Amino acid sequence: TQSTQPQRILGAVQKNATRGDPRSVVKAIDQYCRNKEWAMNVGDEKGCILDSVVSEVNPSTVLELGTYCGYSTVRIASLLPPNAKLFTLEFNPHNAVIARQVIAWAGVEDKVQLIEGASGDWIPKMKEHYGVKTFDLVFLDHWKDRYLPDTKLLEECGLLRKGSVLLADNVIFPGAPEYLEYIRGNQRYESCFFKSHLEYTKALDGLEKSVFLG
Ligand SMILES: Cn1cnc(CNC(=O)c2cc(-c3ccc(F)cc3)cc(O)c2O)c1
Ligand SMILES: [Mg+2]
Image (tube, rainbow, N blue to C red; front, side, top):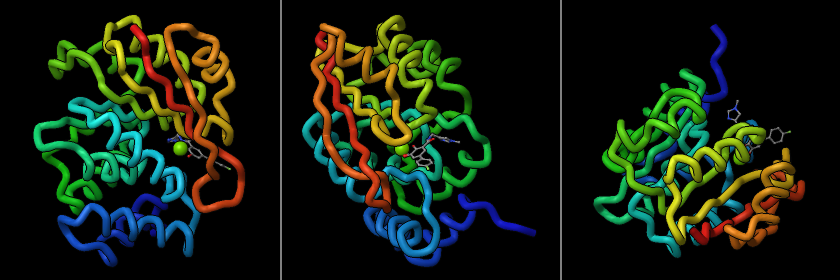
């Protein structure tokens, strides 16, 4: 029977990466997706920008919207301090099954809570279910038309504090125009754009970093 792309990505990790070594997992996925088949991981170029923002924020509590195969989950988790927690939401159950195995192979499962379900359903439940107070960093990488409604939901649920950082992937390609318009025109955010390229291609893309001012 045919394999799926997430299954093939997991296979590349199990074949080429060292158990317990997150950087080798990231490298194995990037090499597979650059040389064999494109996939929608944030990739290494934008991934380096992600790394620098994570290191700068040094977050205790992170929310990732859109796990896919766990590439950025592993990238972020590998940079977190000991007691920090990364909550990652994935809508697609098959992606979640694969991501759990990629996260385990990297040895970062203690820092990661993967939640299967819709972001719109789970964001309002994060406080009561997981005892989350506020998020220090939010990485938006899920359906592009959910960036804006979910950002408003985070505000309404009191999950952002003065200084919380939102980092949004793909604001150029595929694009998130409504999100960009809202966040750049909103006095309660200080935003900047990091110009880059769509993963594994020469197409223009970039990340929008926005600090919530409270
Ligand atoms: C099904 N699904 C599970 N997660 C999601 C959310 N992510 C995306 O849609 C996404 C898409 C692209 C992309 C797709 C086609 C293309 F031609 C160029 C770019 C790139 C990304 O970095 C993304 O994050 C969708
Ligand atoms: Mg993306």
